[in-house]
Length: 197
Image: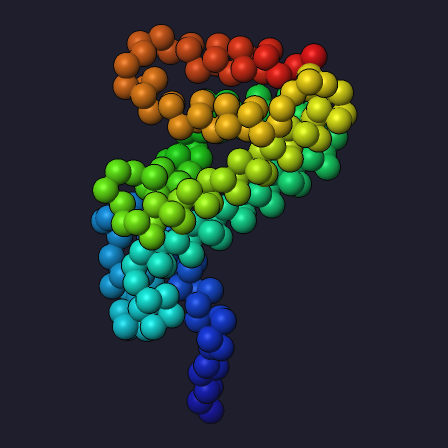
């Protein structure tokens, strides 16, 4: 008895392409990832990828949108936990966590790639939108900490969110020029001291 192959719906096919593209872009970056590799991961032809997303840039934009949604969902879930927001932030900003978040294959790579110079204008705009969305997610987490009394009452969650994102974004610079292996931990503690009452 032969089993018939179930045909994917358009939504399922699009989702499988997004999953494969997320993995490829996170592993190889926007410039080096190939549409042909993404198609092969899904088991479709390269034109099927473009029929669903139009261009490589639009596919990457969709990946960024989904990655931002994942990040915001994660940050929102942290607001309902038992841990103090300052402790959550300490864990999120820990050097080991940031290393894992920005290692090849991880979602953090996508945001870095999107803002890299020379990126396609569609990609740059998608990165701007995605990072702004993540900043709003961070601001929500910080606002929850402010309301709970774990963070300063006069804290501006939006400004603090951008401060944290700037801290993360400048990590590559610090790694390139600072010889002090303890600088990351000391910077995290300094940031947290500015946020706590």
